[in-house]
Image 1 (cartoon, rainbow, N blue to C red):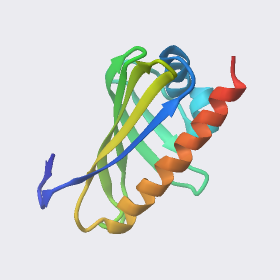
Image 2 (cartoon, rainbow, N blue to C red):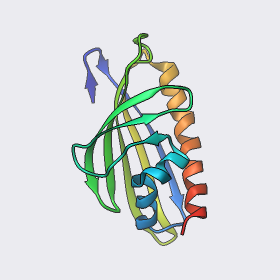
Image 3 (cartoon, rainbow, N blue to C red):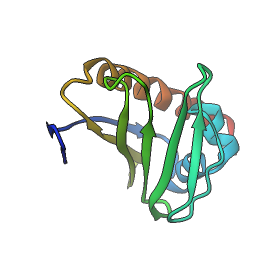
Length: 143
């Protein structure tokens, strides 16, 4: 993916999750479950749906659903407008679910970090690992 200023980078986190894809999908697409592991939201898994994530620190992300393939792939635009260009982020987050013998291989990719966004990139690398750990905790608690 290229931006106006050149190449962009991606954060990729992959995990083996001991739950079937349908259960992981529910946690990725049901607003009350998303709020438990990621952020408060008004998400609906419908192509073209515009929604927001609202963080505990007061940030609001403007999003739009780009791909909905139940139990397999979910993608949305993830834009964070900021006065400081180093934090103004226009990206795409994609979750890919692959059934395995042990459950689901979950791959999360966030593409769109410009080379000058080192702090945002580093924050996303650490943040997504924490988010996906919480996702696993949520999955362990829901039936």
